[in-house]
Figure 1 (cartoon, rainbow, N blue to C red):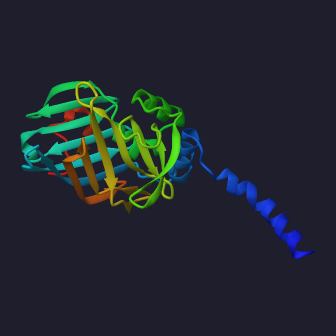
Figure 2: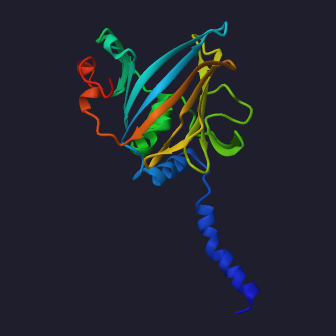
Length: 250
């Protein structure tokens, strides 16, 4: 066979695979994320978090939090010292805050960072889309961009719009790296969250540096340590009535 003809046949044979891999919509993006990690992404994770809040005068306040994740849907935060019984629990679409081991208040709450960073790999696609729409992301707006020197997909905002609800996904590794959305009472503020410095964890990834920015100023940083995946965790950890009595770390 003439090698030019052979090359053309080869190109035609390879082309459909190349085109199929091109992600051009939010639906395709979620599909690709799930295809890549649905079998491997960890079901549980635990880590110790140093939380630093920075006020408008630049004063820093540090706390150590113990965090336990059950994917999809549940995150428990114990604020040290544990004996004080203070913390937060996100589970079943609710947020519970605890003072002295008792529920201080609770309200319906869908945690966007849990959906985008973790649950997206372990929820049915229809549920993911419903939750993202509920969080006011316009899933019909889809484009490509660059973030921290890497190609990303951006959902929810056109080029140059850094205020509308939007999330950014790393193209190569298909994990969440950035979210922007309006904040404050009237939505005049811009709140940004970054998931940085990703490292492998279990059959997935974790970003041990999380940064929260309000109107361009860093308001909170989180640094994770002692990260572990697929730990056996007692379901009672995520049950509000056992918050004070069941712990994964003392």
